[in-house]
Structure formats: structure tokens, C-alpha cells
Length: 483
Image 1 (cartoon, rainbow, N blue to C red):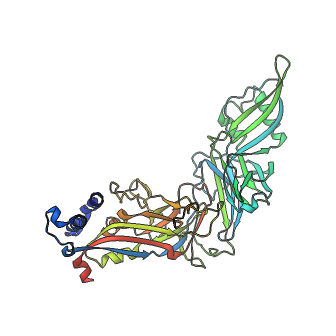
Image 2 (cartoon, rainbow, N blue to C red):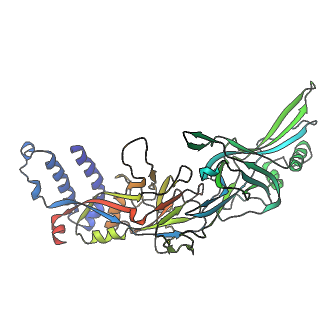
Image 3 (cartoon, one colour):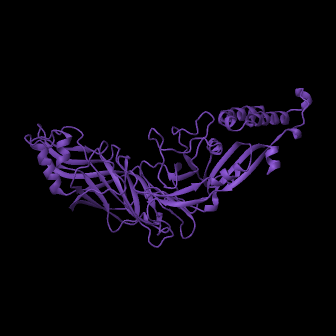
């Protein structure tokens, strides 16, 4: 119990400065709270103080709030150079149809050195699986992936968003019909994300590239700039038969374009060889579009306007820009009715979450960005986005340096512990600063981590009655008596 006293003194003392400025009795509450815990742990006769805890002039309380929430459709999300591109089409019964296309450069890896008698064999695009989102019953269906050539160069000084599109050539340079590499253990299907997908590209294109590699007078391979002017890059699009969203890891040595060739060496032996183009340093981005026709969120337009779904539930989805706006006004109104209030602990919980599967998951984490009636993200003077900060007595709750990332709590079916599948984290410093007026932002947008890149379409469905704030607080008996 003495350890608990030390923790509470440490946690609350950093709040005292602002409260003492605004409320003269705040320090008395802190010291009184410490004294209450001390005398509750020890017999007054033993510690030499003849005090009856019942006569102390403060008390501790608990309150729970259901926080109002609405939906906001935000504008396009940056998707460039995230290390992963998304391709595919998935029809979610709750969120509608999401379609993804990918764009990427292909870079030189080394200066090619092709023997004069080299003979072209094939040109292959190899991609490393990194993510899958969809119905597991569709994974053994045949998916059609179409490959095109970029008709214009990507620009390193351009920010690419989920709504961005680049011009491509009209002719396909490759097609691959595939099924996912899955395993089935005890009826539980899993997808092998350590495997690769190989797409055979048009022979005419491969021969053209190979001939340029052999021609010493051709400047195409003198440097990467020349090469990108000739071969702007690739576009990946789902065919008509595509039932999921696939993530390919661009920044991986397994993702590359390969020219296979053979030649005869000085000893007259046939030698098989290859040249690898790299995707790891390449500019890349994903275009993500959605069609919510027939769903409860069909009418969520225009942008940056608050909406309510027709079923009154709360919807959040990465990649498509649908987020939840949460209002902390109830706790401010409650605190205004009490003269002196110190937050001992405040816990924000979003849950329970329903429904989801192993392959249609909620976002791993949520972040809470400050907003106002405009529903745009707010920034500090240095240009950093303002968020609820990680709850720690040593952190400044008004800072932007340590954003709270609320992780999803999965139920462990191997244990008998009753775990609510939710996002739940302490926000004590934020609530205290909000009550004291040190922070004026009482409206937040709950985003899948992170707002700066779209690498998944993970989604979340919440009952609005399950967005809760619990606070444990201390106040003077004068305050409670006057209520």
C-alpha cells in the first residue's frame, strides 16, 4: 500500500502546478489523498497519529460515461512508399466493395554485363506476399491479376494518396491466375505469407530490354534515371475474378523483376544466368476506392461532415478514410459541476468488437487525433498533428511527441479469463488536462494507425453504447455536499 501511495503522489504531483494555479485547494486534496491511503494502511496508534480517516475532508468516487460518437469520411490518405502495396477487390457485407490497384517503379540493381552470345529466355515479375484480407472460403478460388506498364514516370516530389492514379499503357504485359498458398490444421485455415507470386511478362518486352542490355552503345542502362525514362514502372490491377485484397511487400529482396538468359562460356558449356531489377528503393503507392451501395454507411458524404450510419453503429476502416469522431463533452460538463476534482485514473474503452475473422480483422491499433467542428486534424505550431498522448506522469499531455497507440485486445481462447475484445487504455493525463483547461481539444477522430499511410483495409464495427470513459477521482466533501 505504501508503494501505491508513492505511485499516486508521483502521478498526481505533476498535475498540481496547473491545478494549483486554478484551484487553491488542489494541493490539499493531493496531500489528503496520500494521508487517507497511509492511515488506511496503518493502525493510527502504530504510526503515532490519532486520525480517523472518516473525518478527512475529501472522498474518492467512480463515474462512467458513454461518449457520443459520429462518423466522418475524410479525404484521401497518403499511400506512397509504405513498403507494401495493395491489390484486389473484396465485397464486405458491412463495408461494401473495396478495390485496390498498385503502382511501382522498378530500379536497376547493378550495371548489367551480358555476354555477347547471351540469349534471352524470359522476363518475370516476382512479388512477396505480405497481407491478405478477405473470406477464407474464397482463398482457394482462382484470382486473376493483371500487369501493365506505367505510361508516365512517378515523381519523387509528389505525395501520392489513395485517390491518386497514374497513366498506364492499355496493353497488358502480364497476367497471372493464382490461388493462395494455404494450410489447414484442425479446420483452421492459414495463408502462407512467406511465399512469392511469379508473373510471366510479355516475351516481346523482355527481348527488347535484353537487347538494350547487350548493346554497349545504348545509354538506357548507364544510370537509373535513363532506365526509368525508358521503363517507367508497373501497374497491378485485379481482374474480374478477384475476391480479396492482397498485400505485396515492395521493400523486400524477394520482390523483384528478373531477366533469365543463357550463354555459352569459354569452355563451350551452356550457362543459365539472370539479372535482377530491384523494387526495394522504388517509389510506389496504392490506389484504394470503395463502393458502399446497399450498406448502412452508403450515405456518408460529403467529406468532413458528421454522419450517423443507418443502423446507428460506428464504422472505422483503414485505407478508405472512414473514422469515428468521439466527443468528451460529458466529462467536462460533469467536472464543471464539482468545485475540486483530481483524476486518479481514467480509462477509455472502445468495444466490444463484432464481427471479425482471422482474415477480416480490426486494426491493430487506434490513434486519437484532435479535431474541432471542421473535422480536420489539428496541428501544433511546429506542424505536428495533435493527439491524445501516452499516459505517463513524466509526459506532457499537451505535447505531440508520444501519441497514444491503443492496441486491440484479442480474446485468448486458450484461457478461461473473460477478456472483452476491445481497445482500452489509460487517458488520465489527458482527462485531467481537459478538465483543468490546459487542453481545450475535447473532440477526437479515432483513426487506424496511422494517418500517414494506407497499408491495410482492416475495419472495425462498434456499438456506440460501447464507447466508454471510466474515471476514478478524488474531491472534497464540500464539493460533494454542495452538489
